[in-house]
Image (cartoon, rainbow, N blue to C red):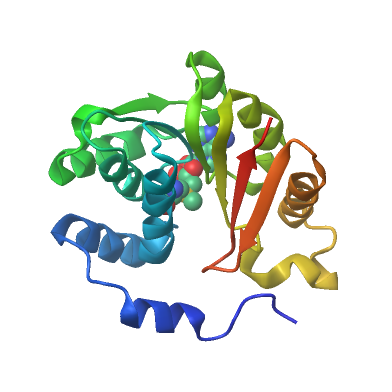
Length: 211
Ligand SMILES: C[S@@+](CC[C@H](N)C(=O)[O-])C[C@H]1O[C@@H](n2cnc3c(N)ncnc32)[C@H](O)[C@@H]1O
């Protein structure tokens, strides 16, 4: 019944290039402390979309200890800017150390508090928004983040296949599952958006604002 492809993650991890010292250390820390991070396959995807679109201004919703932020910040280059957001002061302190160790702290702004409130409080438009907040917030993210993208900009969202649970009847009433299902439906339905769901890891959607 699962929507996810058995064995895909293990295969991809076996062929992905090894990461540098700081990313490898954060991956180990996150696994040991059960901190949910996107991991290297999705990290590379984020960097690739930044490169493909030439994104320079990136807003991240839900950044934890900065693992995905490092992939984004490296990809935007020295002249780019990434906004890190998280509700946790402790995560901010740890992320700051990780970003410094990765050599990208100067191009990342740390915004502690509700991620969408931070987006509302930050002026200007973005080339790419990466969404990894609590899943019940996904429909709200779609409503509030898309207007902040330049036309042609991308909203990239993690966990849109939600561990393969979207088609399981037992999950019908689960609020997180319902919110992701609604988010995916809206992404495909809206005529101002061009959407693809990639079955990578836990599912990643790539939404392009077309007008
Ligand atoms: C899945 S983790 C982010 C992992 C990170 N993107 C990575 O891959 O390295 C989600 C984080 O978002 C934070 N978070 C969830 N919902 C949030 C919200 N509405 N506002 C601010 N932070 C939020 C949580 O505290 C958590 O640290």
